[in-house]
Amino acid sequence: MRITREQLQRIRRRHLGYRIILVYELLMLLLLPLAQIYSPLLSLLLIGQALVFMVFVSRFSSLKRTRPLMYALGCTAIALEVIWHLALIVSPDLGRLLTLPHVVVWVMFLLVTVVRKVKSLMREPFVTMSVVLGAASGYLTVGIAGGVLLTAIWVLQPTAFVASALPALGPGGDVSVGVAPALMAASFGLLTTVGTEVLNPSNVSVQVVSNVITIAGQLYVAILIALILGRVQKRLP
Image (cartoon, rainbow, N blue to C red; front, side, top):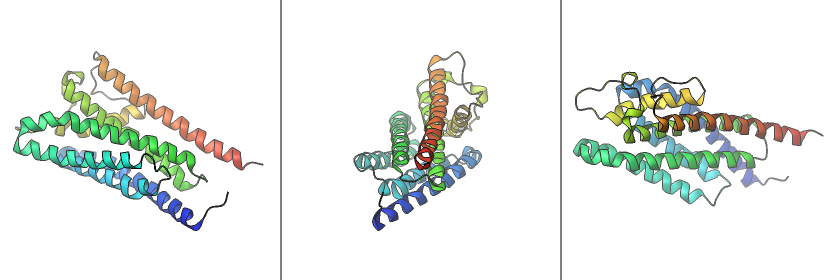
């Protein structure tokens, strides 16, 4: 398979994006305790992640057909994030109304990102360390999407969670913003099958979502292993 100089440059830039995303998502995970203290931090991190996806990976991806959808969802998610926070300050009632569409757009954006990541990895001509790191970043993206999805469930059914296991808020604090870091951390617990104590075991909806997050994580790992073994098998004589 012959690769032109231009294609090689795009591959190198895309692989650099894989590494940047992994480092960024690990940093985001480590900053969750700080985000619980300073609630806007998680929103800033999510905006930064959307920009990293669009600037460092999507623009160099070979998947051109879904690129406009990726950009449209990413820009909409960023805009809604800013509008949502401003609405919570100016008009809390309006902010609560915008919470659900804001979360839905983020879930759609992250899911499209994961699907594109898997398709991009399957089209990579070689399995390098950068490709493996890119696959690992996709696994973390599943956890982040799960955290946003749990936040949507919390908005719809607060009783689906154990209130005593969620962080307490000060007077006038917005609940959905305050619990978001805790729900993000809970999602990674479900993703890695460690589990979490914030879910109400008697609520069917949240149990279904938790199972979806866990199964998605295991399927992603299976796809990653199959990808690497398949490429290695092709290189064997």
